[in-house]
Length: 191
Length: 382
Image (cartoon, rainbow over all chains, first blue to last red; front, side, top):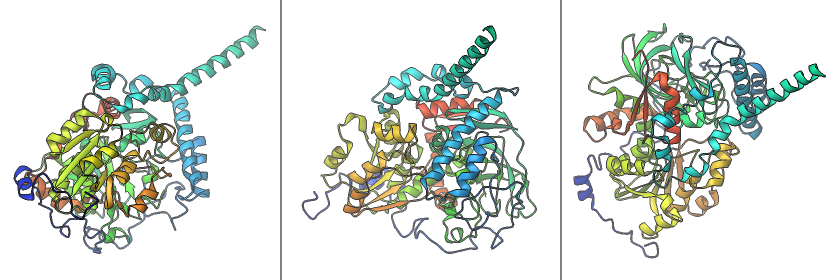
C-alpha cells in the first residue's frame, strides 16, 4: 500500500519464481547487464580499423540536415529526390533544421506528392500501380479477414473503416477529376 | 533481383530492381535468406514516417550469406552466413566509441537525431532494406556477425531487432529483484521484454493489450499475467487496484506510434499525421507506474511532437529511459540465454511468407488478421 512504508508482498517468492520460470534471475545483477553502464568507451571493440571512415563517392548532390557539419562519410542511395516531391524535399532540408515542425511537415507533404507522381507515372510504364494487389487486400478472403476482425474486444474495429477510405480516396478523387475533365473536353467538342 | 518496393501509403509490391553494388570500400553485399516485417515497418507502410520515398525497399531485420565484399573488408568473406543488426553504424564516431551504436553520427546525413537504419526511410539514412534478394551492408567489418553453427536461422533473424530490442527495453527499466513490471503491448517486442524482465529478477510481469490472441501468447510464452484493456473502463485504475494502489515499479512501452485505446490520439497521429505518434501507451505508463518509478520506451515514434503527459511524469519523479537498441551489444549475452534454453525467439513466429506475397504479409500484420504476431519473409533465392 502506498499509504504505509512497506512494499506489498508478492504472491511468489524469488525461489518459487526461479523454479517456475526458465532463466529467472540469470541477469539479476543490475551492474552485469550488456547495456550497463549506458556509455562504455572502447573505440577498438567494434572491429573498425579507421578513426574516420573513407568517404563514399557523392554521385548527386545528397540532401542533408543543416545540423550536420558536412555530408556523412557513408549514406544511403535508395531513392534520389525526383520531380516536384524532390523539389519540396530539397527545400525542406536546405531551409529547416530537424527542430522545426515545418521540416517534417514539408517532408510528409512531399511523401504524398511523391505517391501521386509515382502512381501517375506508373500508368505510362508496363507495370501500372494496382491497388488491389498492392494493398494485399486479397488476404481478407484467404486469411480470415472478417472473423479476425470480429473476434474478441478489439478496440481498433472502430477505425477499421478509415483505412480503406484513406487508401481509396486519392483514386476516387483522381477518377472523378479525370471524368470531369473528359466530359468537359468532349462537351467542348460537341458544342 | 526481386525486392519489396513501397508504392505509397498502404501499398507495397515486389518488382525487379537493380542488384545493389559496393559503394564504399567497407561495404558487403548480402544475399538475404530470411527477413522479417517489424511493427515499426508499419509506421512506414501507413505513411507516418517523414521522407519515406516511393521506390524504397523496407526491412531492417534480415540474415543471409555474404555475396561480395569491398576492398577494405577484413572480418567477413563471401560465403559467410551472417546476421546483420538493424543499426547501420561506423564503429568509431563519438557515439559508437561509447557503445551507442544506434546513435552513430557518420551514417545518416538526413538527420542528426537518429542513426542509420536499413530500409527505414530517408530520415534514417536512405538505405534500402533486406526484404529483397540482396542488400547493401555498409561497414561490413563492424555490424554483421557470423551466425553460430548451432543457431536456427529463424532465431537469428529475430536477434537482429525484436529480441535485442525487447531485452534492451527490460534493461532500461533498471529492474531490481522483486519489481512489478508492466509491459504495454503484446507484439514481438513486448513479448520479448516481458520474457526478459524475468531474467532480470522481476517479481511479477503484467502485459496489457487489446488482442486476446496476443495476450494468450504473452501468458504462454512469457509467463505473464495479462489484461485486455478493452475490458476495463480505465486500465490505469485497474492497474492501480491490482498493485495495491502503489503502481508498478517499472513500465515498458512496447507499442509506440500507432497505439490504440484513445480514438482521438490514434486518429490524429496514425491517420491524420498531426502528431509524431499516438502516445496512449506512454501516457498509460506514466499514469500507472509508481512515483519514483522507471519507464522504458521501446515503441518507435516519429520525429514530430506528440501529446505526452510530461506534467505527471515530472510530478511523479519518474525516470524515462529510451533509445533505439544498440543491437550487437546485446548479442553475446543473448546467445548464452538462447543456448541455455531460456529464450527461444522463433516461438513467436506465426507466418512464413514468400517474398512474392509481401503485400499480403503487410496487410495481415497491419490489420492483425489470422492470429499474426510475427511474419517472416522468405526470398526466392533463400
